[in-house]
Amino acid sequence: MKYSILIQWSETDQVYVASLPEWGQYARTHGETYEEALENAKEVLQDLVYGYEQTGKPLPAAQTLQVA
Image (tube, rainbow, N blue to C red):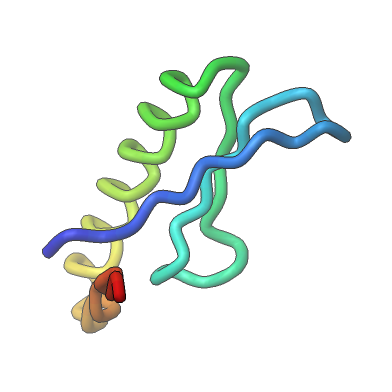
């Protein structure tokens, strides 16, 4: 499955914040650079998938972008 990673600059925190929208509002991480935020998000995503699989919870459905 392919999941979304949304990376945005946080002026307040002075870091890039990476969110994983399919996993809920608390599935976030950050990095001082865009690349670091992306790598951290990939690690969080791997941990989430592993945790869900270990507990037998169904994985959330991946969202797809619809461009008009």
